[in-house]
Each structure stands twice: as structure tokens, then as C-alpha cells.
Image (tube, rainbow, N blue to C red; front, side, top):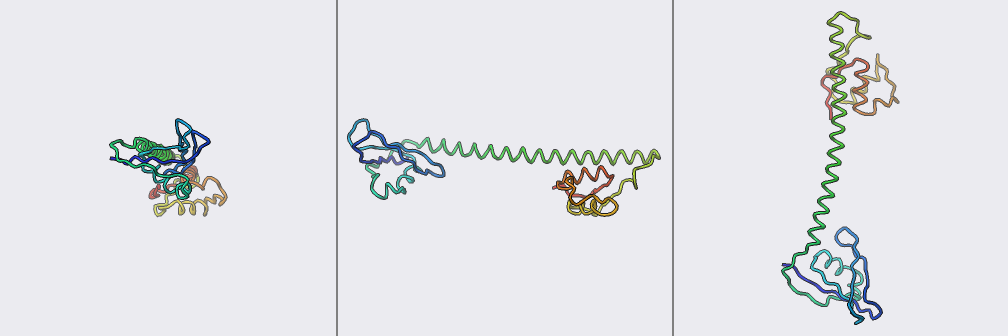
Length: 191
């Protein structure tokens, strides 16, 4: 059960008057009107958020807008339900965007990890076949668990990857550089 409220404004010169209110978190124009030039413009609503916005407005507190009728009704405030559905839809769209971004990041990391595994397998096969493995072969760093530690290894001896090297700014870049140099971080935690 809802409460239907009628609000009125005295205005002899017009049949409509639009006033902007903040209803909930949104700006909304509410139109007070009359079918004839009686001098009394009305707005009827059962939406509690609109009622609250009107009753907290400067015009209401100054007496420009007056509450002229209140009655209980079995009507449901459909517009309020529509607003809630729209807000939930917006939240759902934002959540879906965030999920898509995270999925894309995860796919990139998986791709780099796959490249690393393929490079390791390739180097192991070369070693099995007695081929010469570039530089000192696969260098494994089992104690490295974070990307900061991996960057430190890549910047140090013998790799000397420059501190300003853009490839080390992302986790994917660190892994790609490791693959390129034949370095393995088997215990690296992918965040």
C-alpha cells in the first residue's frame, strides 16, 4: 500500500510549471500543471523518493509548494521499480565490463605462460638432441616468487635488462623477456 500525495503551487499566469529536483541520486524535472487557469498547479505522486525530494526542497520549506492532499492507495509506485531495474542493469553492465577486462588480462598471462612453456620445451629438446643451447641454456630461478624479484633478476648480471626497459612494466612483459632470454621462474605467482 502506498501513500498518494498531491502538491500544489499558486500561479495565476500559467497552466504548467516545471521544477528540477534531485530524486534519489538523479536529477528529475517534475511538472506541476492544471487543465485550466485556476491559479492552482498540481502534481500527484505515489513515489516515495519524489515525495521526499519535494518535501526537502527549498520551495516546499519556503511554502511555495504546499502539500494539499494525502490519501492511502493500493497503487504501486511502478516508476520506482523501473528506476531500481535500470540501476541494477547499469551495475550489471559495469560488472560485465570488469569481468571482460579481467578475462582479457588472464588470457594474456596464459598466452605468455604458454610461450614460456613452449620455449622451455624447445630448449629441453635441443639439449636432448645434443644441440647447443643459446648462452648458458635455460637458467632456472626456483626461489623467485614475485614479479618484483623477477625484474630484479632480469636487471642484474648477466642479463642487464635496462631499468627503463618498457617490457618490464607489466607481468606479461616480464614473462616475455624471460622467455626471450631463456630464463625460467617456475614458482612465480601469477596475480
